[in-house]
Image (cartoon, rainbow, N blue to C red; front, side):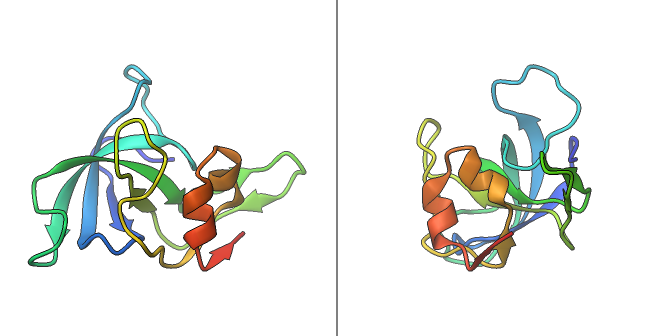
Length: 124
């Protein structure tokens, strides 16, 4: 469960290290975003000479949250950090980077982000 101005880690190799959530795509003024949802982010910290720069606005999908999420079978999934993957285009569900670091949730694949799921190290 993430809200406005939440700082997230970036789980891909685009060069961004930290981003801040500035809104939700096509959701009106909802207060919270959950695992597997597309959000708008602004880059707060990036490495030099990377494909993304400080201050750029991008869309990203949430792949890890610290707040637990209940699944249909009654189990819960929870991670150590809040993390996202920056998306390549507004309408395409493909990542901008070519590698995904760390584990991701199974809900990412269920929401249609198959490319992100196939690049990930582990899926929980």
